[in-house]
Image 1: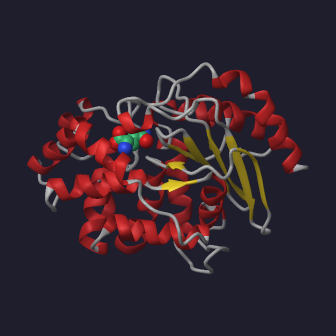
Image 2 (image 1 turned 180 degrees about the vertical axis):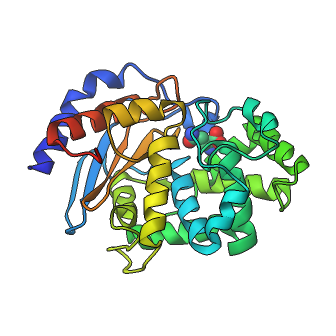
Length: 304
Ligand code: GLN
């Protein structure tokens, strides 16, 4: 398979979709991204990196941070995590409030916002400064010491993050947040604001493709079984109420973010990152989904 040719062709083929979607505007600092941008990168376990489009441009990884935060917390806290958050798809939007009260403040999974707030709370208890710990982890896993938060985006989200504040306060009332609510929200927003480009993101995802062992840092980040678990939750919950469509069309564990990025993992082979800021109705990159669908369809690769 000629991966470079394949992703260059895909970049050309998805161009018509770029005009059909707009960036997230509920976080005002994200709304200004030009929706005509597209980038895709593939990092393989044999050390190759292929990239196309605006692959140097860093964007806000938003909820893709949740996959890495889950991996960090699973590594240090283990299965005790599952007392505080479930592992079932929610079938609801990522910021939905309805299910949480029925389920006594225990979020369905770690990738909806409520679940990620619980994971952040555990990270604060276990790792101390959880957002900095995540940033340092991603610096190591992308071999890019310059990666950092975007404080403008974090502040913008904090100012407008009333739904996340509502989720956090409700969970606090149920006893499922142990740290101060404002502190949990601040670390959550900061982690979401991290800026990376597709090449850095694809490289950082390699430990998930390599059964927990990072070919970038040389560290065993997760056990083989934990890497399988994170990938399984990405497949079933990583794209929220579109997880069924992603499994059907892409057939890979994926984690999306409202910054327009999507990380996909092909265990045993490669990690793929796409970015285009225009989102579909469910908050996933429209051109990103089209690109990943074409990648697995044309290459014949998927987990199925
Ligand atoms: N920071 C965003 C939020 O909390 C993340 C959502 C997302 O990327 N899906 O709403």
